Structures are given as structure tokens and as C-alpha cells.
Amino acid sequence: MKIIALEEHMLPRDVMQSAGVDLGDRAGKRAAELDDLGAARLAVMDDAGVDIQVLSALSYFVQGLEPEGSISVHRELNDRMAHTVVTYPDRFRAFAALPMTDTSAAVDELTRCVDELGFLGAMIHGQTSNIFLDHPSVRPILAAAVRLDVPIYLHPAPAPAVVQEAYFSGLAPEVEACLSTSGWGWHAECGMHVLRMVAAGVFEELPDLKIIVGHMGEGLPFHLDRIESMLSPVITGQSLTVAETLRRNLYLTTSGYNSDAPLLCALAAFGVDRVLFSIDYPFGNSKQATSYLASAPVSDVERQQIAHGNAESLLRIGAA
Image (cartoon, rainbow, N blue to C red; front, side, top):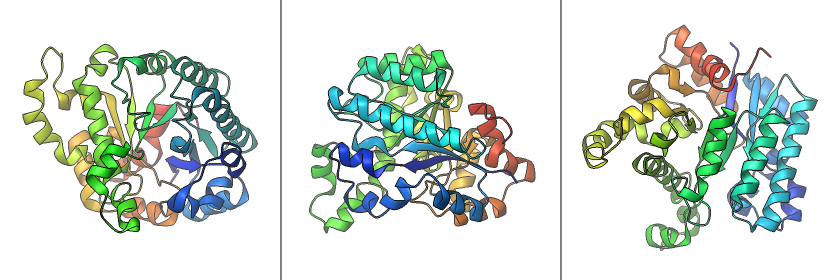
């Protein structure tokens, strides 16, 4: 079975060092795997049966840099991914990293990456300097994605300091770090981020905008009926309900989730056409993820859709 994995991270040590960025404990423990774009990564892919990784820079470390530093760092990250794709054309594709503190530069970089480097879209990590993607200042970036006909992968990122302090302080440092990120906080905020975009009318203005979220939908499938009954009645003047909008504009990946309940919930809420396979490399276990995919309680046709068919359709990935 062909397998395409969509949320597979990289972060070159030398680029981060030149930017003066500390990866912290969590990403720091994976620094060698994030840095490697060759033999070691390919060995993990081969062992797990992954045919193609769609690379993405773990760029929330630099997404909020001031424009004068951000533009060059993001260009270097994208050039590094592009070199990897050219070196291993059958094994890798890429999502662009964007300098979100300079809207015009972000539009230019997305356009360069898609038109010149052949990238499949972009990955944006949460809010930038307390600005979410529903803010009017960000609209040119989203409009560029529509014009280029590529998706935006919305990945979680650390919460603003005021949220961090209010919700997650007062705990043991390791517990606070996990609870505020991969243990809960990231997913709650990313799901809320998508709902802000719906409520603000982003998808009414840009009905062809395609957004991908990972982690089996960041809680949205589980809460969708409640969202529809509570939130839709208070959002007026839109042509679709919240659930209808999400089912039109949102795609989900399995990244980091390898069990029946969340998968079946995502399939029931959004349909198999909207669910794509991901691992969350190097934070997710590649062999575990592909083994679960092979045994998941879905039909063979659905398994093929999740494994590669939906990615090929959405991202226009040809045969490897």
C-alpha cells in the first residue's frame, strides 16, 4: 500500500543557530532527527513503509521574528526543503514556511515556493504576535493560497504568554510544558483558531480556501454537533452553517493519533474524503502509525484513500 505522510517536520541546526534560536527541551531532544534530511530519515521511512513525506519546517520558533530577520530565515528553510525534494524526488514534497510578521513578504514567499519550487502549499503555526488567521491583515496570504490553489496547513503553536500564565502556570515545569502543548493546549487552541476563521467570515469571503489541521481534527469532530447547535445560530449573515463550512473547507490528518475512537469520530463527522494520513515525524512513531493504518477498522477502499488517495487529489501528487 502506498503511503503519503503530510505532517513530517524538519529544522536544520545551522539555520536555527544562525537565527539564535533555542529549541527548548521538547524539540531539542529531536534536534538530530529534525536536522537530518537524508539517510537516517529515509531509513525510518523505509522501515515504516512510508513512500513520501511532505516536509514542513517546525518554524514556530522563527515565525514571529521581526521582518528583517524572518524573511531570510524562512527563505533558507524553504531552500533547504527544496534541495531535499530535488535530491530525492520520489520520496519528498514540501509545504512552505512563511515570514508571517511581514504580510507582503509572506505572499511573495508562498508564491515563490509554489510557482518556482513546486511546493504543495504552506504550513502556518498558530497565531503570530497574537494575530490569528481571521485578522484582516492576514487576508492577503490566504487569498494568495486561493489564487495559487494550494492549502494552508494550520499547525498548533505555543499560546501567547498571557494564556500560558493564566491556564498552565503553577505546575511542575515538565507537566506545564506538556499540558500547554501536545498534552492538550495546542489542540484546543488550534480548533478554536479554525472556529474564529469561520465566525469572522473568512470562508465566506474565500470559499475556495482549503485548510488542513492535524491531530485528527484538533477536537473539532468530537465537538461538531455541539458547535453546530450552539455557535451556528449566533453567526448571522453567512450562506452556510458552521458545520457546513467546516465540511466544505477543512481537511484533517491523523498525525499523532493511532486508535479507533478518534479515527471513527473523524470519519463520521467529516467523511473519508476529508481524512489524510500523517505521522508527526519525528514526534510520532512512524512504524506505529503505519501499522495502525494497516489494521484500522475501515474498508480497503477507505484505507487507500486515507493512505494516499486523498493526498494525491488535494495536493496533486503524481505517482512516485
